[in-house]
Length: 138
Image (cartoon, rainbow, N blue to C red; front, side, top):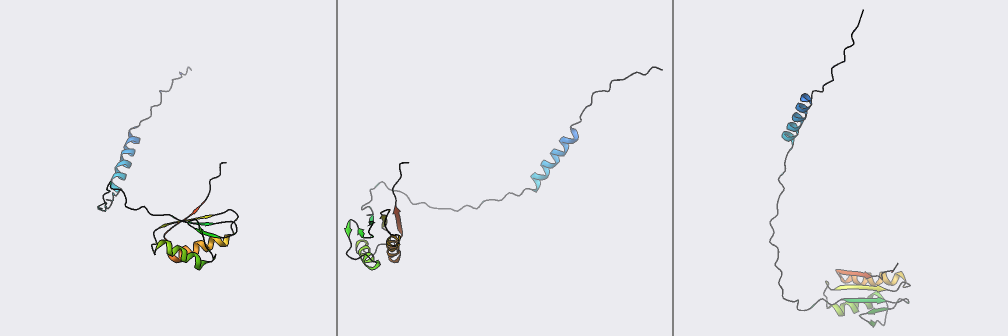
């Protein structure tokens, strides 16, 4: 008996059902997706002018040395407590709270002196306060 070996036909992959499933998924996601309209806020922005500012805001500088002594705009205070510093700041600012205040303290300054300066500025309601540091070259 002689058996013939038939070579099996090459397998063929039918992609039609796969494409149908992908299209059905695409249609499902398109139909089920909700689109939200983002709300818009209409604003009228202020216009800038090219006129120079009349008077720039003066920067108030409080310097605290290593001994804890206060200097306000390069003038040393006689007393080194919260009340003296508040009086000096109030005299310079004339009650304006939006003037920028910079606190410069020596690296060896006692922490309490810096806290006193920050407390005096906070009690006066100063809005713009910064602490100056030096940049290390490393």
